[in-house]
Image (tube, rainbow, N blue to C red):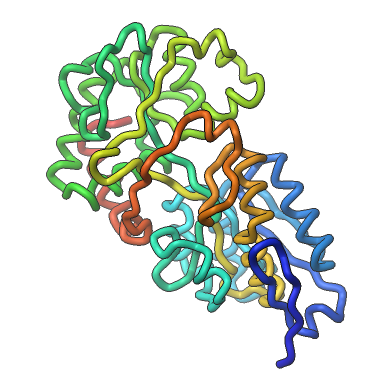
Length: 339
């Protein structure tokens, strides 16, 4: 099949002549809910002529919908946040493996599925924040969050939160099941309150004094640095410090925003072209500048708001391997009484 090339800021989108010659569309099932993603979609359409039809919703609902639609599903690409949801889609059989030299070259091996069912396109580090007035010696590792010295100080989301599930799954991978159980039990014992709210609420808990230590993804704090967020003004944040954990060991845990090509994609070439576009320098810069995330492609500019949090070493564990621990992670949470 003859092919045409569209050069695009550090990568190349490959499109068949049939794709380029006719009016095309792409059906995107997405649980990403960020207004800044509009630029991603409009620029892809401008570059390729491919119209994006978006179906948005809760990740689990979209996965169930794709499964129910079966071979007749109109879905071409599935986008979501966190490795756990990407793996859930893979396990449900609603994604297909794809071969792409562009994605293989640009997406690090530890940030994609071993069978090329899903790929990460942006990163968020899950780190420790603390009240600098109340906590003189904050935890420097994830395991230290379970230290009895921090009893009554820790605020963290529920065990049903995908970010926490993947964090615990990474602890299983890096330290083993026994250490993971000790960690979950220790954190429960150290909780300042029952798990509640989202990541921003954990940060607000530091401001209100209800929490001395909290766990949150980096982009929630970076967003507050970039623009006004209720309860997290510059004055509110004056006594909030942060630690990128495990800098002398495995490195800070990162979770992903990513996607895969639907198992029965009716517009397969367009789907692969879109995935390759998301790995381009241009799209990678949008992920960072628009939503305060970290690019997955090396050398791409990082948003000033994210840079302000400081440089860090990320855990390079295979997130595909981490995903295999998710069922055990939920079991450990349940047995620890982590609500």
